Image 1: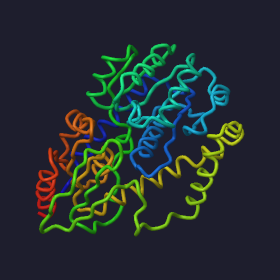
Image 2 (image 1 turned 120 degrees about the vertical axis):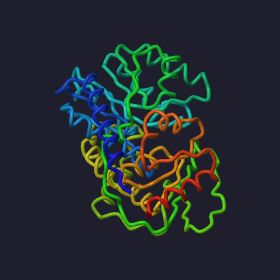
Image 3 (image 1 turned 45 degrees about the vertical axis):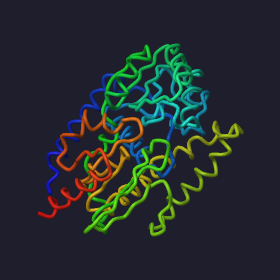
Image 4 (image 1 turned 90 degrees about the vertical axis):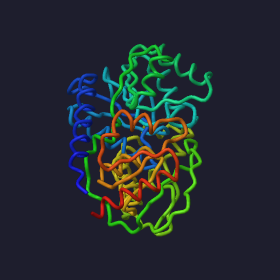
Length: 348
């Protein structure tokens, strides 16, 4: 099955990201990129790599990077001068994940209220209006804050509840472009289902005449190949520094450079792992947004189910419904039947 039409769409969305970033961040601007995600949810590291790719293309200078733990406002100010602060994209602009990245965002907005700050494309969801209003006040009290959202549902929410400049922008993972399938398939159907706060509780229905593997990519898999030694060393270094940074020992000022040097190689490793997991299936069914997008970038036929608050439907209806290798399903049973049709089409 050819995915040339999908490659053309991905290229169009990547160019749109470059245009939006370029309008907001002039060439040669010094920028700081904060909230690096070092974890097995491949979507977040893929966002980081997509951000870096787009920033490189528009010609800005990334002078400081930090995770939620290694962020230090004084160091950022010294490195940045009068540049622009960028907050990592994703789905933590809300209260489903009330820790670490979210609290770092609030801390940064309060400490750096005089520095131009852009929130890179987020999905927005709050369970408690109290949490929303606390963040809203920080955004509105900031001297120069812009909020990018990656789907219309979140853009409408931002327009209604946040009196700050906001804009719709494609998901930064599109900036990575198409990539080869990471490995050969080994089952007909890979069922990648969320096991985190965004899970909708989908259960794999009975499946006949197809081989199936069901998993989530958050947990280690028993048959995974070990990482190369260099990446295991980087992971150990990053993991060893994290609690020391979190404890406020002052090491964040002294050791931010060696810590930051681990970010891109680790992001590449997490994304490669996620792509290899997806490539196990000839067809994928998933309620993970980046299970969807990384399948698309690899040319893997796949079926999309929604997450708990409608994020995937909003992305699908705005962007990816046009893709030839993507199908939507309302229920697990519909998803299995759609996967069967995609598998049959791929074999013709």
